[in-house]
Length: 121
Image 1 (cartoon, helix red, strand yellow):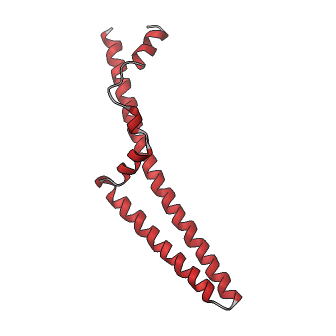
Image 2 (cartoon, one colour):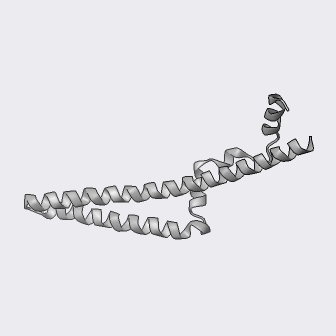
């Protein structure tokens, strides 16, 4: 087989629409699906806890009169905000993990199709 035949087999007809598969909306729909329920509960639960702690420390910062307490509340506020963003990054990585798994499965199917057509020819 030459390179043109291999490219023709790889670029063969597509059975589905790729434009709907890689969109942001499809990733969000996948994240809020039934199989991601435990991750969803963990992510939103921890995010809301740290967001509430950040709000409380922000309020206490402005109510405090001593500089020492203000520094402590400001540091706690910054730590809570950083942790909440890290939780959101974890959720984003879980979304990417699912899309990478899907792409690997798609490649495996294409390789199986390619080997099948090579055997038949």
